[in-house]
Length: 110
Picture 1: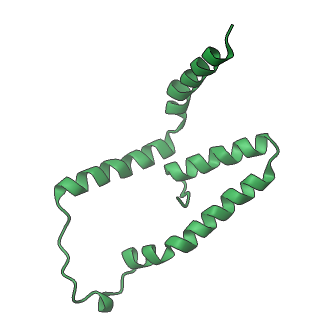
Picture 2: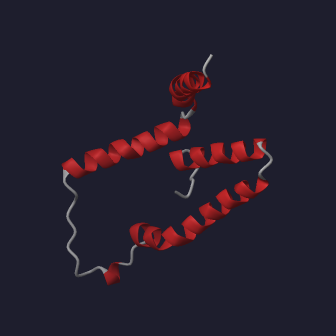
Picture 3: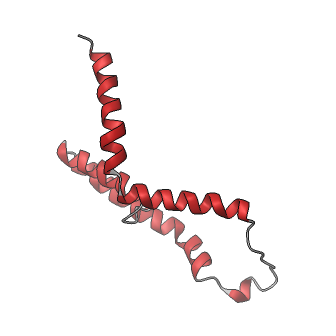
């Protein structure tokens, strides 16, 4: 959501910004940047509690490790977010572009 480089969020915002710039719509680039900044502000409390947690506030809470059945899907999704963030060109070029050309060709007619 924030658009950290190397993740899918950054890649999607990057392509949206490129499309806006190609069309001369600078305002959308500003909106994309502002949305990233607002997401940082909104999620900072969550990040603060996760990474810089305050032990004195959570001493009475007993935490166990999540079961493997929950960890495996999270690890797979995190890996896919990074993979498609770094290698977004391949699914766009080899899957989505031919699909969109086929759809546009079928709608446009002869």
